[in-house]
Image (cartoon, rainbow, N blue to C red; front, side):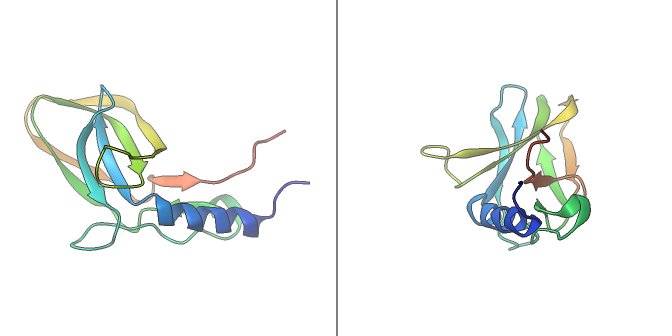
Length: 125
């Protein structure tokens, strides 16, 4: 027997408590920019886990967020962490984009809430 949907949503909501910061990373897995996921000053936070269907056990960013990207940077993806400082941090994971994006001039990256999520699901046997 697998775990219930209610359990998966509970675990997801607990994850939102510890995944407090989000970074955009470069092709060397280094931070380009890191923000607090606190809902302050226009920054997003995590939504509560969805209930039912594909959203069960899934937390998403509460809104889209625009990052400034410096020239000469290649953006690889995003990661979430337990704190602002790199020393002593716990890297919880994240996602790489389908392809790394080089910025020859400075520009912007919009991280969409619809596609930025953490899914808590049981493996398919």
